Length: 271
Image (cartoon, rainbow, N blue to C red; front, side, top):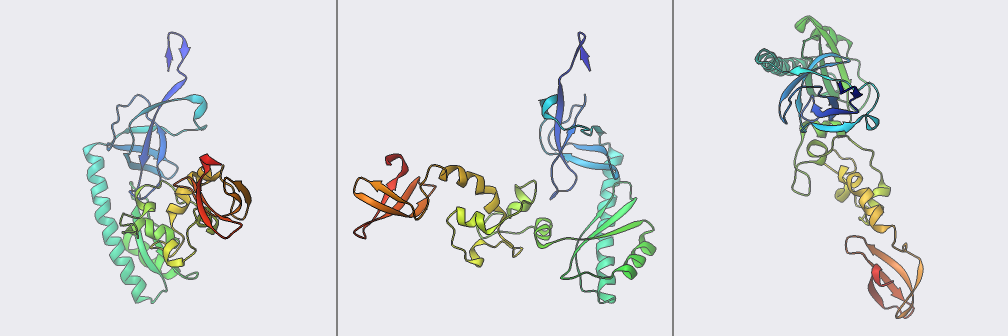
């Protein structure tokens, strides 16, 4: 688009989700008037797909955008919404049928979710299993029943929790399904950085893996602790030499042990 002979150096960007628990894709909204929660049609690498706008349109300079940014094709019509509603019905039918065939064939796998492509060119079945599963006969059953391309994808415990959802130990919905656009790698180092006791029951989520919030808050703790002396370091205080034994990043304090064995707390601003 050009204005008075000068190229437009900005693009209208919208965030779109194709699945409720899926990640947010940033797309070029072009000239379309799209509002948050509008349904849109996008031509993806896997064909036409219907998604939901989860952000308002933002004007972003070209130099901040990736090459090959996909555009929104159009706003969804009533026919599109009706087709999507029928796909949801098909997904429920496919889920029930697949679960029955898994039980009949005694396969060591757990069906988690089913996703039907917008144009019904493919149906994807997500499952969990402890080991690899020979599901070739199951695929034949599904192809014969639904007369389309069938794909089975094995997912891990984190992805299962993201799909199924649930209430975490904090009393809120699990972060992976609620506020995190991506599932990040979580390590024990992150729990240590946040001074959390390495008790598996305290640092594990519903999926049995380390809680996603450890990764979400990790950078903040690193920033808060950057000016704090590390545990074990000897420092000079107003009451004499002392050794750092604990850090409290949220309060901006450290606990130190003096040479006479006395323990005191010091605000890092007072060092």
